[in-house]
Amino acid sequence: QYGYVRGIYFGIWHAISGFCNAGFDLLGSTSLIKYNVNPVINFVIPLLIITGGIGFRVVLDLYDTFNKERHHKSKFCFHRFVRQLHLHSKLVLVTTFILLISGTILFLAIEYKNMTTIGRMTFGQKLAASFFQSTTTRTAGFSSVPMVELRPATKIIMCILMFIGGSPASTAGGIKT
Image (cartoon, rainbow, N blue to C red; front, side, top):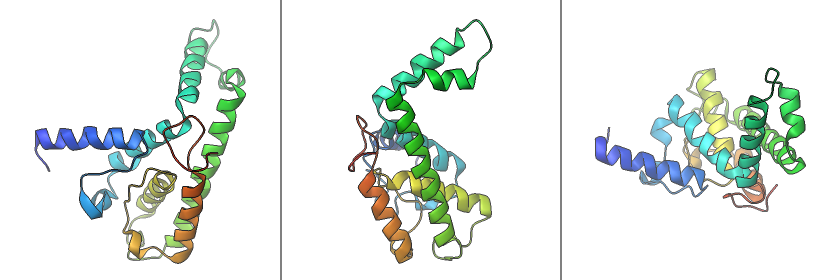
């Protein structure tokens, strides 16, 4: 859509901005709205946001623990993997999971029939857009739906998620989990 050079530049810019939870995009006031049903955008950008939002210590702990488990003499065991994680990592991952899932469910429930946001989408697209908004609201600031069209209850939920923000020692803002 933007050509190779500009497209690669936009991709790198948005990847860095997503990981850093900065929310700067070069697409203007529409942000990522025209890509709200694009599966790559709806999952890659949130993955970067989540990775930056859980913090470097947690990412390193996950990496180290995965490598230890991978080189273990027996088969990979998820239960043993989780037991080996530091307490900080466990708390961050559980809190992040709870906030992401509850934000997704609340966004989906409140905006489900709002024809100006996600009402015209299929259920899978609604779920993906709700997950995207739940993730980016934590501190990244991208949008895949028109913010001005959101219902007041959704805006309140988003304000709460923005206030909480990301996890300690992460690139995210907020009061931290």
